[in-house]
Image (cartoon, rainbow, N blue to C red):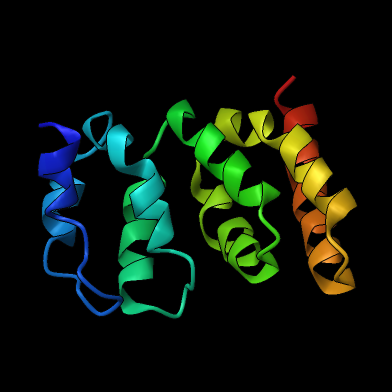
Length: 134
């Protein structure tokens, strides 16, 4: 299935969960070509479609790393908060380890102390897991 074909199954709005099961059944690596588009739908975790797409994204492999790094470079702290809170902890631990540098950069660059503290807590958790897996 090519990207154009996959795009037709994306939600039409934040309430549209009609094709989520189909996308989930297609799965990875086929969905890699629309990772950016899938991540858009988790911009706000309060959207009904976001929770469903998070369940799909947690099965993504290392191909999701550049997409997450792009989001971490944005200045949208709320979107990043949802990402750190709802997607990153569900990803394979090796993918999480590979995001440590980008997460540290985000933590260093964000101006909001609440988001900075949240990023620090998450980084500490990943680094502790990293030490246990050595």
